[in-house]
Length: 112
Image (cartoon, rainbow, N blue to C red; front, side):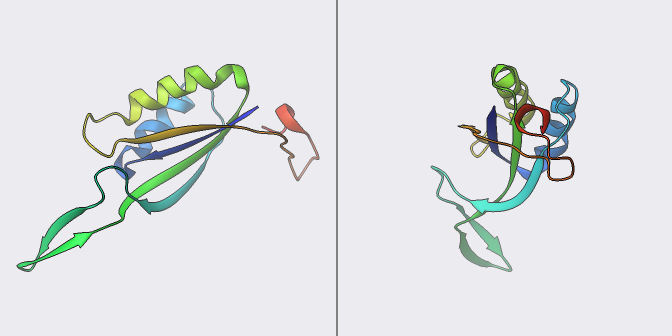
């Protein structure tokens, strides 16, 4: 089992959600986060005053899946989240040691 953590632009959330639902992914967790990458934020103008925005709004998705589905899932997410501009995001893949469905007690692949 793997845990896929995805950081994307907020306006791409619906595109990614629809894309992964289209390949049978049944669940994900979404968190609103802030951060920066290589661009280190940006400068904005507000009422004539310039100020630095250090942390940009992003959305973090977490998806637990079977190991054999990871490559296809990465491909689908990458295509749906792509804009071609700085800040499109990142995908991280972690080993998932154990999963437990609290309601039924199902373990590991049955729980996801």
